[in-house]
Amino acid sequence: MSKKNLILILAIIALAAASRLVKHPPNFTPVAAMALFGGWYFNKKYLIVMPLAAMLISDAFIGFYDWRLTAVVYLGIAITFIIGWLLKPNGNWRKVIAGSLAGSIIFFVITNFAVWALYSWYPHTWAGLVNCFALALPFFRNSLLGDLSYTVVLFGVYELAWFYIGRKQTKLMKL
Image 1 (tube, rainbow, N blue to C red):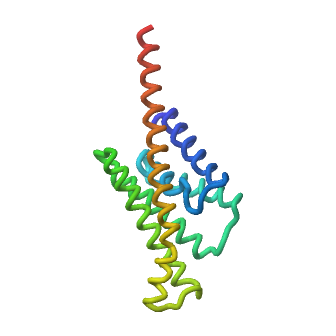
Image 2 (cartoon, rainbow, N blue to C red):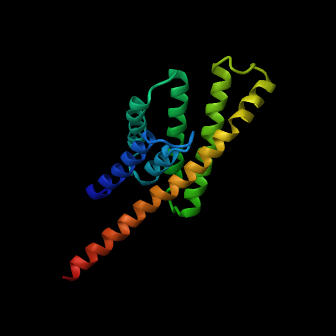
């Protein structure tokens, strides 16, 4: 990976993490898109720490919550990174969208199951689990819309930047 490429990827991830700090509708954030983007464009698996570190830094500003639920949220982010990593070979825009949808669904399922299992907010019955998921659906809508929107933005900005850089380098080579 070239230095320019690494800097561009890290800048996009940093901007996505920073955007968590501005006012937004509940769960309409770039977090999953940032993880998918990192998994897609980083060449090394160990760079999973980059979106997780960006999340940790932004959480330091926003505030932390119960460590158990935090661990599940970070697991969801890591899974989305891995989805990006796995879909990257012979990737196309359909795989990017599918990865975004898969990441959204997996994140929704594991985080809401964790809320049901870890807390006494809902009865630990089938009805309680169904109620937990039903009450989370409005947040899922926002997550899904945010994930898809930010995925288009992050991947689009990256591809446009490289298109522009490539055109600029081609012009310089002609001089």
